[in-house]
Image (cartoon, rainbow, N blue to C red; front, top):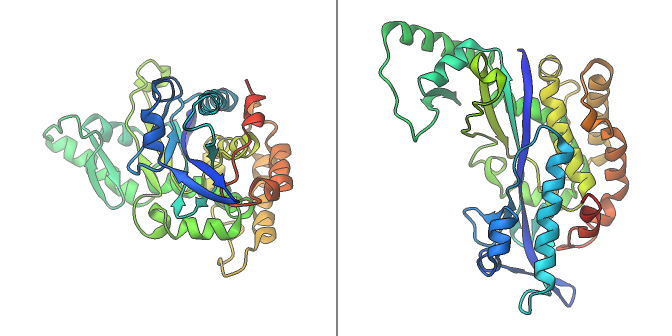
Length: 339
């Protein structure tokens, strides 16, 4: 499966929290954002379906450092606005797997070109394989009628997709899970992560682990000849607490796409243990390190993620401080040092 990484993006979630007498209280994000056109328009921050939770919406980039810069700018401007507001100057930006009863996600977007003529054909007739059926790729566009030849090609596409020989959302999720999931389980605070996973999307038995997004990079040179796919990986907990943790997640996402074929060969090696009622952080970290070592030895790396191993070590060294108490604010000063 030949693939070319295009861009990485994200929409990690966070909360506005006021710590009073050592207990966090949440202030609804929609109220804070509605009070400031600066936040709403200049810092690409909004709310999704849940009014209490805010999310970053920075633009995608080919370079992980560029994407981190945009996140840092948004956090800096938001924190500066909060500090100068009479009503909201006690609020802090907080990002942990779960705060009180609010589970938070750290969605990672990856776009990729793949040498899959049948996938490109299916998208040209506004179809895509999802789970176990063919659905509309873009619901805002019409679905053309099929000729007999189109029907035959679509049947071939479905067969290959069903057999996991194409980069479907399911295969993309497996590739991303290979590195990102053991890292998630090892680095995030165990109890809060378990609580978050029991409440959040596909991890709780509802929703989607991977979402196919719609975009059309028509100015990209490969767009004419190759299939273009844009997936959103929704499993990770939010990682805004510190730029090192953000770098680790985004770099692992990019590394996974750069080494798509190699990871497909390595899926499940070594297997993850069955997660029980104990943290197992050390065991999961060891499995993660062994999988990463294979990529280091045999795989491809880009310059913008060359510091990944050192940053991962820093994440494990600092995780206790980052998640010391519920509702702990993110390290804004660390983010500002990226600007």
